Amino acid sequence: MANELERQRFIESWLKDQFPDKPFTLEPASEDASFRRYFRAIFADSSLIVMDAPPAHEDCRPFVRIARIFGEAGVNLPRVISQDLERGFLLLSDLGNTTYLDVLSESNADTLYGDAVDALIKIQLASRPGVLPEYDEALLRREMGLFPKWYLGRHLGTEPGEKQAAILEQAFSSLVKNNLSQPKVYVHRDYHSRNLMLTDPNPGILDFQDAVYGPITYDLVSLFRDAYIAWEEERVLDWVIRYWEKARKAGLPVTSDFAEFYRDFEWTGAQRQLKVAGIFSRLHHRDGKARYLDDIPLVLSYLKKICARYAELSPVLRLVDKIEVRTTF
Image (tube, rainbow, N blue to C red; front, top):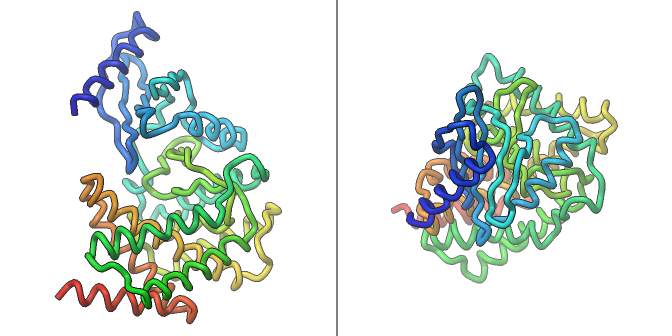
């Protein structure tokens, strides 16, 4: 806590150096699942956002670099106004405080998701190999490994035995093979309702600093199998079809067979849901952020439905169901 207050004083001093004749107030804007914090600097006639990313834990350089890359694609992002990379401070334009999650409803979802899909396609069309880190096998496996370690092991208190570990390994290998076989584009990695802002032009896009080059269905899964808001499967299917049609028309490398594309979408979803369940468990048990536990049931409901639909993944469903039953009673 003392270190956080000290960093806040550094931020205030940094801002005063840049705006010596403009009084401001500084108040918390938001925090995320990392060590980053955000403050809103409120001036008489405007406001700006300060990202506080302690260098011992975070690196601002990917944010600055990807802001440029995605900005050149023509989407709405926070502009980097000033930076102190040594201390881990960025001064950004303010996209407001209204997230998609705040306003999404049955009546506006088609419009808002349509805007999000259009922005996503712009990012994907700008994709080039060798620019962003690869979403490679090592990263895919490291992410899925959070599930047995943190959800099964730490949260449910059951370390997978030899047979269970073999079931998970087989599923992980199948998911990795599918993910790596898909056409590659720029991947935001957390393209969902808490990172999309209601703005003009819409949407404003946040939290892109971990972007990679990987499966074309990944951000679509983040958007429509969102850990924080759920929709009827028929509606999600319709939205995925609309994306697929727009993507084909735009010349993106989506498969011409929609059934194959949707299978890739689902399998990418399974990889992401394994990861997210592990991350949310870790946020609670390691980082003391208990609020993420409330979102695990929705994430697991997505995972279980997918595993039930595909024979290759069904052993994972039986394994998880058995462990959950044993640890609940």
